[in-house]
Length: 222
Image (cartoon, rainbow, N blue to C red):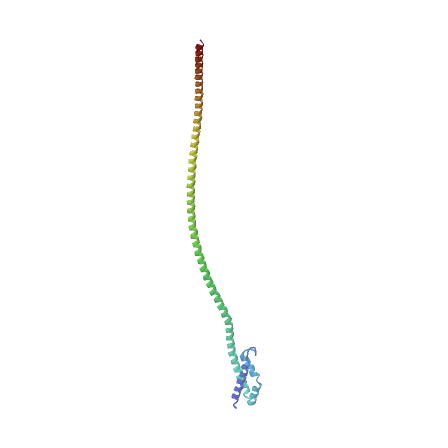
């Protein structure tokens, strides 16, 4: 058998054993290191190499180490890439969360601005209604004040008329009372005078009648 072919087969077997030993929680370092350790842990492969060709043992070791180094470099690049991917994944997640937060904030900001505009519109509407109510209230107050002034003026005018009528009535009543008293006094005076005159006339007639009666009685007695 060709020693190179035997060495290559042994190296391949060692690499296969080393790679097969890779698993979660098994081995140390990268897969390349585990592969090299797998090669180093193959005493049978080393014995076969020594038995078949001692002169190619150093060459096989160099080749295996070269393959191991290449695999280590490759695994290092893969590990760096995977590490980068592992770092990029949470970074991307965090970036996505930040973007989502910003997007949600923008949506909330848009909603808040919309609510603010609606509130401002309602406020303007309320202010307009308040101004209209204020103007209408002032107009209503002015009308009520004018109506109250007119009503008060009419009431005062009626009271003035009633007062004048009362004064006129009292004056007429006083005049009538004075006239009545004067008339009563005049009537009493007239009655007194009449009584006095009647009394004198009655006395004269009584005396005349008595004289006539005495003269008649005297003639009868003669």
